[in-house]
Length: 349
Image (tube, rainbow, N blue to C red; front, side, top):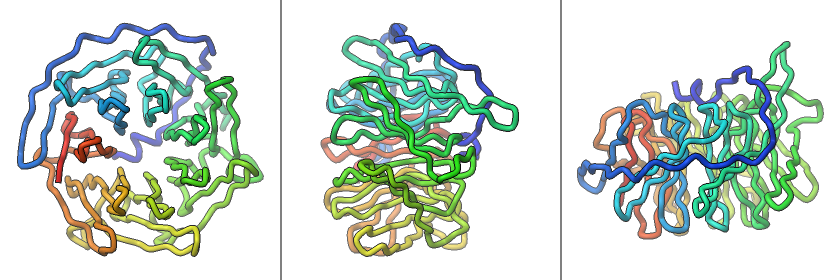
């Protein structure tokens, strides 16, 4: 199951904090395309890659992790070329990625227990290790999972096992951590995904509690807000142009909207068949107010137009493709990874 894949905690040894030299990327691989309507799917050359959530850089290239092969990979839509870059000292735990203002790539290595930085122009890696946890007579990684960049260029990230939100200053390498509760816990809250709104407030989801989190960086104050539908746990999160917070829930196709100004929630169901269990994962907000999500059980990309109450579905051609993250290119094309289909895919409505 997807949740067990993403939240597993393992016992790992510590890692050194020295800079890493890059392993050379493989030569670009020309991928074939499978078209169906407005979808284009590009099968990867290997099988069982364990594709993670994608991001898009300033050149329009798609970056994503290949967990099973320990790759940081990049696909160029301009020529359908794929580069698979081995991660030095990686532990097959690459998770969330983000693109910095200088067009470099930051990533979370959950099992290796570090925040990684890759500079495409020099092909150099830098590793920022996190502290191992002592829990039940075991050593656990803090398990970084999701990342976001603030307006100052700092890298914020969630720590699943450590129940903390961290921030890394790229200029100094210093890492600061914020505990979610007064009494430090381990594996109780599992902060999962985060987003930073226009005011610089950090919003995050908790995959072990029916709560929405808010962190005010100037004061360090953490607020945990109870959500409706308490049988659900939140996954991915984003914010829209009006300042509302949106998050997905994996159990029942939940899409939740929260307005900080009124402290009110609205709940939507991204389910084509209301009685059918429906997992929703990646989420994207457009400037026009439309919300897009990927539905794993419906095998579809779903759109909630601004002001409407129901999602419309666009079925993915490959069956059981298990789509994850979703990003939008400069020409309005959406890109997503298919963990089940082992493909990179695009969609244009």
